[in-house]
Structures are given as structure tokens and as C-alpha cells.
Image (cartoon, rainbow, N blue to C red; front, side):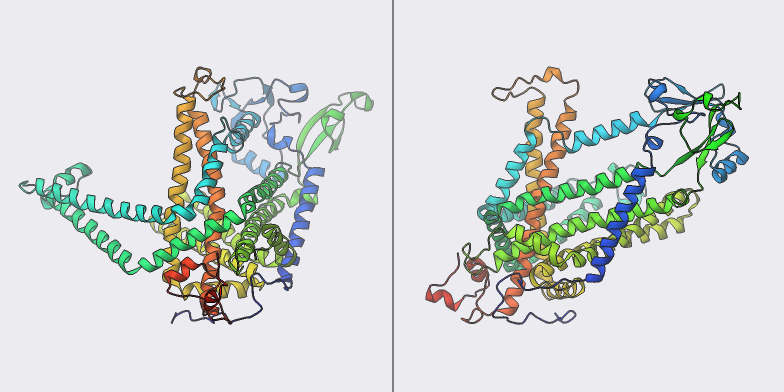
Length: 613
């Protein structure tokens, strides 16, 4: 509080939840974002009109024909007659500067669909891209969307039930987990002391053994177990003291978790919002991938006795009667056009716009959920005062007033991610030439940028909550949120760790439960009623099990991300409630009775029969 005093929220008698009368925020950033989107659409249109994905998907022979399609169907692989001609410095420079292909004959070859290099008699075999690309795409589809068994449906139901039942089971689960951690520490102390007593008569010491790569030798030394005993005892003592002094804050965290479960039960549509985010992200990824697969590459062909930018499929020798040796031969890639000269810059633009759009979609989801859950907290009488369709209303408010603020936060995060990508690229390209000092500096820079990205995500998340409630611009909202959290930093840490522990246990429960069920099903140990599936029909039953487990984790993560956003939103509202209200008739608390009981607070209005649910 001394380091980050800030300005506590002042009492506003007209305030009863997310501000209704608000204006557009961060308009300049909104205009910039819209301009980038329009430019992104223009880049996509240019790529689709002038690009050709076959340049990425299929190799080409010396005449410019694609392998594996058209007249070369059934011959998907490319054979270089003399690959060594491509390796000489003169030819490499000529290829780089003039855009010519490797100066050796290249023909189609039907071969095995395996990814390998074969050097024999100066013949080099290169596989074509389509098989590898299709295999990768198929794997992504299998892992992301196809769900054998109704296992993913079970994961969805279990995740939903877990979140809804937290209002009743949260206290028991939290205390069981805390006692379990303390019990594990106590067992560790006992085991270390038992091992220490067993090796009491041993003559070996650390000084006698010295340094060795056989770490099992150190476990036979009494001093090792003494060190373990001291370390675990210190950690156990710290945990016990933390539990004693922070027990009230742990109770507050539990009460907020219960209140979050109750809020979700009144807004079941919030559990479906991750589907909206998923669809929007899928659109972003699909647009980026489609644009990247349509490179603006044009080819120059020898048509008869002329150079033309026209495919050989349009060539007819009878059109060139004055040139008896007329033929169509691929010459080079055209790099003289405006778009061809800026192809690299357009691809960079594609990546930057893609990252900005993805971060904006995530920000939109966080702001939407924050607005919905804050309307629940600031409803004095629940659920009567909760507005109709809170999720839809919050989504419309976010799009109508705060596109600029959400784009501002997304832009800051995008810039940091771009710097991290550049640093990773530099590290990858210079790895062979790095000395230990350079590797250490790069490692420190990557670590600092990783921490900076995590910090910005934390600031953005809480800034979006304040934007959803008060409708201020991004900078003001980020400042107010950060100041509010720093004035209650201990509560922030306790709530964050208790929530993380509980949600981790929930994810583990869902994923492990569905994984075990799918193992017994696909291995044939159990049969579902009415099912015609037989395990003998599977050559390798671990693949569907892994698919179900991975899909279950994604589903659990989607549900629990909504719950986590609910906890964070109610927590900020709770802190604001404590600062702006005092429980009097003029300034009643909006928090639940359970929270008021923990803090030894009450509303005078409750004595007159105006209590809360």
C-alpha cells in the first residue's frame, strides 16, 4: 500500500454494475486496427488472385510442370540429374540473384512416399511436399477435432459438473489438498530421518566420495539425508506458518471460488463462449494459412521464341509457324513485379496481422466474460437484479465501445511476441557460431522477454476487467487495476495459488478419468451397452486413447478458463466493494453473506430485511 498507494474508488450512489453510459475508447488505435484489417484483407485478395498454392504444395520439373497433378499425375516426386551443380558457389549466386532454377535437368519420378535423401551415382531424390503436408494436416485434424468414443462428451460433462459443484465442495477440496501437501512434507521428514538413522554407522562421507556422475552413491551417505531433512523441514515450517498467518485470506479465496461457481450456475451461457473464441481463432488461423499458401510467384516461360509469363498448359506449337523449334520451357521465377519484389514484406505483414488478430480475439473474450460476471457481482439482489442475457450484452458493449482499447492491449502483446520471435530466429541462425558468453546473453534476453510477456498478459487481463466495468480507456484501466491489486498484493497471491491448485486438480481429475475410461474401452476390457466396437479392429489402440486424452484436456482447459476469468473478475469487484462501501444504508456491501462473515462485516440494510441470497 505504501509503494503503490493509487487512489481508492470513490463511492458513487448511481453505480450498480458495468457502466451503461459510456463512450468509445482509444479511437486512434481502433482506426489503426481497422486499417490493418483492411490491409490484411487486401493482401489476402492479392494472394488469392495472383498467387498459386501449387508452388508450395507441389515440386516442379525443368519445363515448369507440377509433379503429381495434371499430365504428371501418379509421379509426385522430383529427381535432380546432377544436384552438385546446385551446390557450386557460382550457381548458388546466380540462382539467388536471377531467380533461375538449379541448372540441371529435373524430371518427375514415381517413388516411395518416404521422407529421405538418396545419393547414388550423382542422383539425388527429393520427396514432394503433398504427402508430408497431408499427413501433418490429417494429424492435426485427428488431434483437434475427431473424437473416437463419446470420450470428449464425457469430458465436457465432467468439467461442467466439477465447476458447478465447487460451490459445495470447494472448502473440502482446498483443505484436503492443503493437508495432503503438508502430509507429504511430514512423510518426507520422517523418511529422511529414517534414512539418516540407517546410515549413521556408515563410514562414507561427502568428502571421501568427491564428485561423481553416479548420483546413487550420494544416497548412501548420511550427510545427504541430513541435508534433505533440513531442507524439507524448513519448507514444511514455512508452509505451516503461511497457513497460520494467511488462514483468513485462504477462507476469502475459498469463498470467492464458491461465489464463482454460483455465478456460472446463473450464467450457463458463459460456458459456451469458448466456442465463439475457438471459431474466431479458427478463422484467423485459416485466413493466415490460406494467405501464406498463396505466394505471389509468377514464372517466365520460353513460348516459341518469346519470353512470356504464361503456363505451358496454354502452349500450342502451331501458333508459332515462323519458329519450327518452338517449345515451352520454364526459364525462371519472375521477380520484377511490384508484388514479387515485396513478397517477403507481405509475408511479414501476414504474420504480424495474424498475431494481432489472435490477441484481439482473446482480449475480446476476456472483456466479454468480465462484463458478464461483474454484472452478477454488482447485482444487489441475486439473481433478481442480474440483467437479461449478460454475456450477449457484454459482447455487444465490447464491440461497440472498446475495440480500440482491446486492440491497444493486443498490440502491446503482439510487439513483445514479435521481438521474442526475432530473438529466437537470431539464436537459431547463430547457434553454431555462438560462444558461451553469447549463449548466456541470449538466454537471459529470452528469459526476460518471456517474463515481460507473462507480465503484460497479467496486466491486460485485469485491464480488460476494469474496461468492462467502468468503460475507461486501456491505460487508465491498466493503471487502476494494477494499483488496486498492489494495495492487496497478499490477497492476490493467496487467491492465485489456491485457484491454480484447485483448477490443476480439476484438470487432472477430468483428463485422468477420461483417459482411464478410454483405455479400458479401447483395450477391450469394458464394453458399452449397445456398442458394436471391438478392440481387435484396432492395430494400435494407444492412438485413439491419446486423441481422447488430448481432446479432454482442451475441453477442460476451455471450461476452466471461463471459471478462472470469473474468479479474477469477482476478486477485483470484491476489492472495489471493500474500498467504495462500508455496509451502511447509503453504502451497502454487494459481497455475499459468506464473505461478510469471514471479514466480520455486515449490512445494516439486512436488519431491515434487505439481505442477499
